[in-house]
Each structure stands twice: as C-alpha cells, then as structure tokens.
Length: 142
Image (cartoon, rainbow, N blue to C red; front, side, top):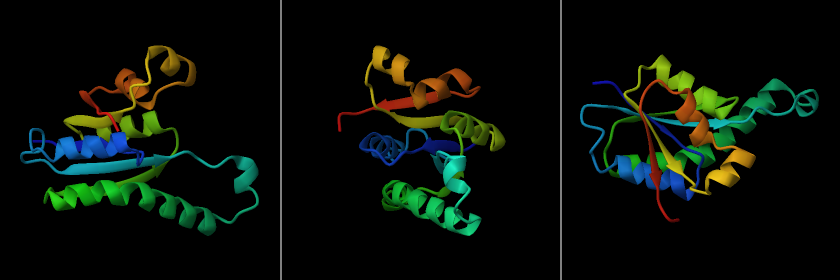
C-alpha cells in the first residue's frame, strides 16, 4: 500500500486534517509524509542575503509549521516523515506526491467560498486540478 501526503500550512485547518488522519481510516500500512512548502523569497531579497542564511530561515519557518502537525501524528503513534520544500505550493505538493507514488493527498480546507477562492486563488483548488491521485479536503471549523 502506498503512502499518504499530508500537506500543511500550519493553520488550524491543517491540524484538523492531521487529526483526521490519526483516526486510522486512511493510514493502515501507510506512512504519512507531512509536507510544507514555503514560497520562494523574491530575487530582490535573495540578492542581498547569503544562501546559508536563507536556508536557515527556510528551515526555521518550516519547523514552526511542521512541528505542531508532526506532534499530532507522534501522539497517535503513526509512522511519518516530514519534508519542507520551497516553491509554488500546489505544484510542489503534486510533484512530491507523484515522486513517492502517493495513494492520496490530504489537506485542510479553509472553505472561504468559491468567489473568494476564484479571486485570490486556493492551494487546495489548484492541487485538486493538478493531482493525478485522489485529494481529500478536510473542512473543519477552527
């Protein structure tokens, strides 16, 4: 059985998705790959900061997002790996899920509504349109 990608942005919605995963309905025999994608810093910023400093900043920011989510999985004693990537989140999530041949992508859904998502965009909506594997959106009041 292939693994599951749990995409997280550190929001309460992402934590709700992590708690849903711990119910065991999806994870029998699977490892959960907790994935956070940070947007790339603009060139005008990267130009003045050395690569090591930028890499350290990305790692610190990713840890702030990944740690609460992985804690939920640790408490449930689920096998997991955590990963942080940099780039356009929807594409990175889909590419990573294809790379590991994921059975499913699980994400928290903000549920702002179709109009607002159409105007400002939605990572979940873009993942849905790009993914070749099933995508489960967990909507939960936060």
